[in-house]
Length: 583
Figure 1 (cartoon, helix red, strand yellow):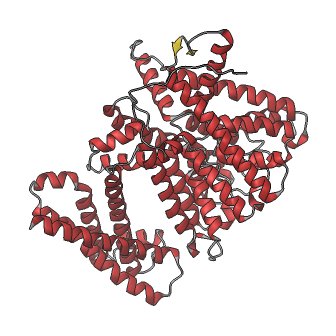
Figure 2: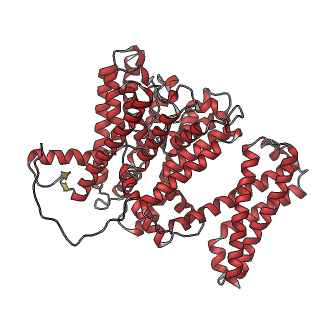
Figure 3: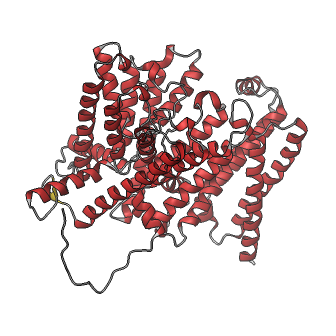
């Protein structure tokens, strides 16, 4: 009987969740008459009754009621909070405090207050149900690469549907399907390539959707789901831990929860710091503190996630002479691109060194490799860009501004996508240098794309070992395993193949100069977002090519190959060895 009731409730909740999502989308995504809103509010009440009843019924039939309360404390807390809101509105609606609070939120009627309270509760419950559904998906017999593929594809699909809503645009007219798909893919893959201006074309609702997709894609969908489940007390199962271990490239299952916690805390900490700094810097640039805070939040998240989306129609070109703004963005971009494992290792090592624990304060080989490559690329890139463009007035009116522009160009080319100079005005040699930086990209475990700094480091170390006639590949007096070397070679070759195919496709479709096409394709693959002006003029087929390139570039060519291929199998045999001529 208990199982029958549980199954019946589960099926009813699926219907209720679908109705709740449809109701919220209808109310916030469309321009509906007041009469329709009244009917929808009645539907919302029925849905809320089902959601509330579910918790108490499951509590009543649970074998261990105390255990159920511990794992579902948030559900009951939301019920209590919703009940307190309704009681306050019902009995204290005429009090000065309630009236002033509602006025600050621009709520002028008691009915609207009831509706918003119901919508907030339904939205919170839907979030919890989504977490539970994702935990169920994580238990399916799918490999880690397949789950990464599925999670990103799902987020892009939902984001596309939301951006198609009339209220997502400033004009109230739905955008074209291909443009919505392009924007959702660019945001989720933290690329930054755009076909419409983000600040003027989208409403605040549309911009909020884009910001959510950026945050989701930057942190990692599976990581965010697992962290939310742990915070809510749902726990993370062994199967889910094993999958996350593979996704996060962790050595032990026990390291998964601390690593996810560090990822979320690092992200939120740096984004909050970015918001505070930008709010202080931009205090005199905007009409009100609320607008300043809004712009600071959007750009702090976009910068740390290396997304490149900007609410300014010229990206950051209006701030090219402002070192405070440019350097703040540069720091956020660099920290986001280093990778969570590197930042966590640096923080842990610094903390242990302060405490006097020199043994525990060791930097890992991965951290050393990433730092060495990142610093080298930033310095070399800035120097070359300055030498190539330093004498041109397009990059700055003074020597200091040209140095700042060269440095920021080197930073942003590593998957960030913001620009303080018109990329289309840069010379062909500079564009080729930027293409190389975009191809290398950021570091593993971070918010950027590309082939990754550590991959190129291993490849360079392999070339050095071959030229010196050494049998082993070595970095910082450590031998790199053969499987890592093979993966690095595979990633680079697959990446070059993807860029080659997409460049051929767009060249055939658009008949544009090869340099311009190659620049856009590498920018899409590296999830950079820099453009020389070609993307906004592409036809629908070419946009699909860029969409595909962004998607494959974000999840990684090797991850794609592992997702569509079979699981690795150990063979009990080996073919005879024979040499072939190389070079």
